[in-house]
Image (tube, rainbow, N blue to C red; front, side):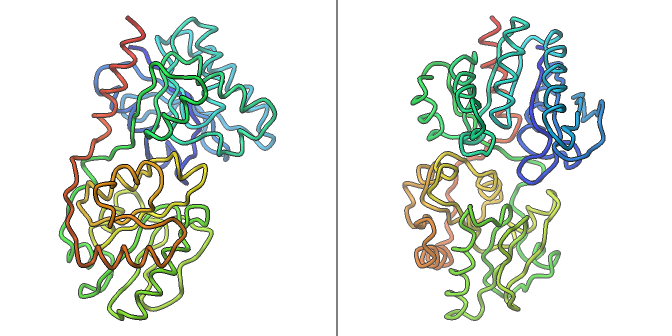
Length: 360
């Protein structure tokens, strides 16, 4: 198949091409390695290098939106229409704009559209713009196939009137990076105390993800257990406590994140019970499970379902007392009877089958 990918360049605090990161990089790359001709068109909201950029066998064309954004977006629309003329199918992803553009380009060129929802896009600022929400729901209803990052999001899509050809395509991992490693060696590599009990997380340390519950829970536990330490890494709008038992590792490159996870006694996935948390499937969930590290997660959305048979692994969102109790339990009960975690090639194979189904 000749597959055209339409998406934004920056997402999850990373850059698709500079950082070579994430769902919209890994799935196209895997599809190309499976023998498909994959090209991508991405729009950068920051000033980045433009033009053709190769990532393995995938040729990306990058455009800058520019200061006022709208002219750059219109250039993107025009370019998408021209590139779609040489494609068999479009995979549109990353937010509502790209599904809307993908629907237009697919209909103009009479080819199928697969619209990938990796979040509840109505939670994004773009969906608050006039008419965008309505056009987004139209794209969801009219796409030939819709893929959703979680089962709760699939249920939400059903409320839009889209029932058929909707499938769950969860996040996955790079199997070459995320795997169990020696805990003591990982702690030495990061300069963490080898004899401490360490809890922590990596990723977005944001208020709207409920990170403050982790900080409060750690302070609560540390007051009673002086050997407990907290280690965190990632972009943030709420800094961690400034104490000697707190290890702030800044923003780590992707290949260092497995070292942090494997250094932990308990890895925490914070979230809130809101229009984002109820429908997402955090990338870090797959990564932590692949590293076989004891996990504690907010009781919301897809992870509430995933761990429903292990309720002691869950805490009530925004409740630091509940989180402290869950962490304390996991320190004493570190079982990790996880199911195998999919890698990106597994997810690309699923997507390939759904694409082939609408082309035959």
